Length: 257
Image (cartoon, rainbow, N blue to C red):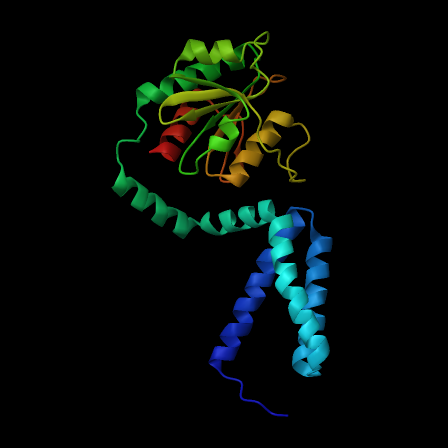
C-alpha cells in the first residue's frame, strides 16, 4: 500500500522524535527509565494492533486502557510531570520572555545593594568561621511550599540575623533559609535533594539540596561549606563554585535584577 509522504509528515515525525528524546532524557535523569520503556512498549503494541492489523476488539480494549492509564500516570508521576514542564519553561528564550513581562508588570521588586550586601557579608563571615549555611533567594517561582516546611520569621534582611540563624548551636542551622521579596521568610526549611550523579562527591548534602531547588525552580541557592568554608551557588541547574565576595555580589545582582 502506497501513501503520500509530504513535508507535513516529515515535520510530524520530527516533532514526535524530539518529544520522545526529551522525555527519554528526563526519565533517565529521574531514574524512571523502566517506566518510560514500559509505556513506550505499550504504545507500540497499541499502534500495531489498532492501526496496522486493525483488530477492532483488541484496539477498543487498548483504547480503554489508555484512557484510564493516562490518568493513572498523571497521578503517579505528577511530580516528574511538573519538573518536565518546568524544564520546558526554563528554556532560555521562554525564560527571557517571561522575565520581560514580569519586569513590565512590577519593577519594584528589583534588588538593590542594601539588600544584597548583608547576604554577601554574612556569607563571607560564615566562610571564615567555616559555619555551614544554605540560603535560597526566591525569584519568579513561588516557594510557599518550601517555606511551610520550616519556621516562619518574616524579618528584614540583616547580616547578624543570618549569622545567628546558621550558628552551629542554633536549632535552625541545619535547614535552609528562604529569602523572598527583600525579607527573610523562614529558616530551617527542607529542600528537595538532587539525585544527579554528576555532582562531585566532595560536595555535601547542602550542595545537593541547593542543586535540587535550582532544578525545581528558578531560585538562587547559596551554600557555605562547613568543611572547607568555600562559597558556592546553584542557579539554573548549574553550580558556581569557589566564589569570592565580589563574584557572589555580582551573581546575586545579575540574577535578581
